[in-house]
Length: 145
Image 1 (cartoon, helix red, strand yellow):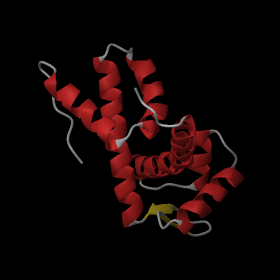
Image 2 (image 1 turned 90 degrees about the vertical axis):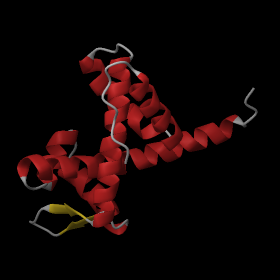
Image 3 (image 1 turned 120 degrees about the vertical axis):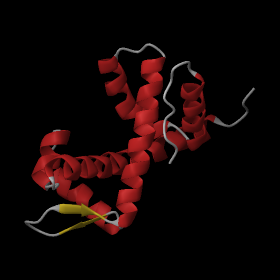
């Protein structure tokens, strides 16, 4: 029986939610660079369905945290630290997605669900998912970080 006070679980969820926005943005910036060659605030606003002002606020936070470089009227670029985080998030996302699909969740549902679940999985949970996927017959193991 787990005797951890409930407030400690809720504190972790609150921290996960704060980190979720940052992770979504760095992952999307990397995605845009890969597919379009650049990431602009207007692209991010469109992708996330938010206002340019909301994007600007997040980009300011990402700059403060050393994850991006951005200048007015120029693209948004990940720093080395931002690139590392984007790769970690993308790999974690892929493991969660593949696990959901392996469990029989329909692809479209698995894609939608993995967008939220990925931010709330500890490294231990993701590693357990990797082991699960590797144990499946005819499975292609997910690459480790």
